[in-house]
Image (cartoon, rainbow, N blue to C red; front, side):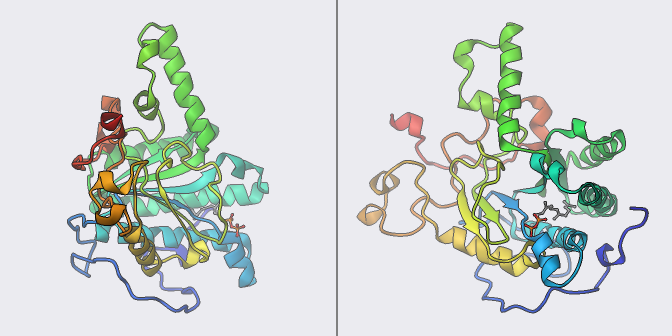
Length: 327
Ligand code: FPP
């Protein structure tokens, strides 16, 4: 793609999504409306949100447009969601831009997706820096061109000290690939005598996953009406709350995210414990027994290396007994 499509330029106000009924924003908004005012994380807010952005193709087809127009509209939706995460104080966002399976799509579509990724990054990098977003790509980057890899490295470098939001974009990513590469890393350390067999535990694996240094996702959103995990963050989402939206990804805006966050805030999370252990009156008949800003037993990734330090979040451990302590 030689030039960036007009509809995707930052200040563009072209084609807005068709009107839909917006429901009340039940989330807690803080900060100024003029910019991406940072907020203090609020109780019940997920620390890490993961999103499968599905439905670009169908959104386009419904409008008689080529699928690639759906991807362009989808890229605009990414920005809206990133901004909303910043405004609300979500600490980490991981989005699935290109799966290991997406290579099987028609060559022309794959090319557009890659070019869109690169042009978006070129345009947005300034905003990412300004708004304190730490950007990183997770996935097997070796399959992409050297130019692509260089652009990613430069963006990661330019944002590595930012702390406002940790944004992971998954490209040529698959959950099974991630687990396999972590296993391979451990095996090679073992063979080299740098790792004891007994030291291979969940934390050791977590520390070698592509998301190393981040807490696991608390909220896993998929748009487009399908109810599948599609090989996204399989290990990391063990305790994630799942949220499926009927909206096609280009329709998923700040209000839609607010609804997902409000739904999450009402969920009860137990991490294998029972209501009484969590101090609930009635043993768990109330919602939100374990506040959603509390953390699962295996958080944070204890073994994260220093190389991952820029992605480590400063979220405090909450006073929840770990499953290990209880055993
Ligand atoms: C799924 O919709 C979407 C993708 C495979 C690509 C997601 C890409 C973007 C949102 C744009 C670029 C992203 C960034 C970060 C710049 P689909 O094509 O599978 O939709 P369908 O199920 O309706 O066919």
